[in-house]
Length: 222
Image (cartoon, rainbow, N blue to C red; front, side, top):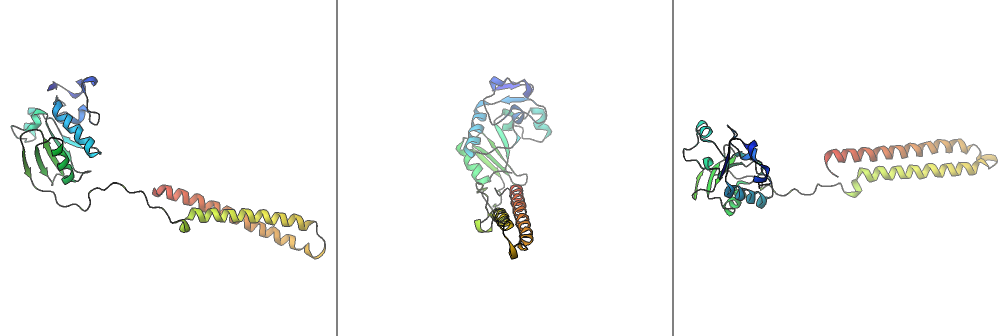
């Protein structure tokens, strides 16, 4: 074990646990740190095993800080081999099983404060059980997407397409009728109105498509 008066004094080459920092393991009251390599190796193994962050509430405690917080006189925190880990992002049952597998023998449960104490000291356990949780923090499922037939993006894109093609078609017809004679001439004015209707439809479809994309992005649906 190696002791430093403050965690900032720990040389980078002496720190071998990538998912943790000296500040996380140091005494919360004094900044002092005692590096227990065996315990930290097991903590890193546990972190890899669970595949998600471990929120460290307390690790090493200096004697004066341990006394200040009412810790046991022979607390394993004094040896740098104990860690109080928050259960905010873990299922306690799964976590404790993994901790035992990683080699932690001391297990203390504190459901009211929502953390579990683990240490490499003698095999023992204490504390109250955690109440059953509604879920086991299952892996995130892929976000649900709209059904194709109900998709506002498809509807908006379709309207824009119809409007564009319609406007272009009317313009072609207008050009053809402009050269015609007689009774068909009065129709040209009406076709001009129809062309603007198709243009409005196309612009409306584009607006719906843009809105749908932005709305889905905000909801995290795409």
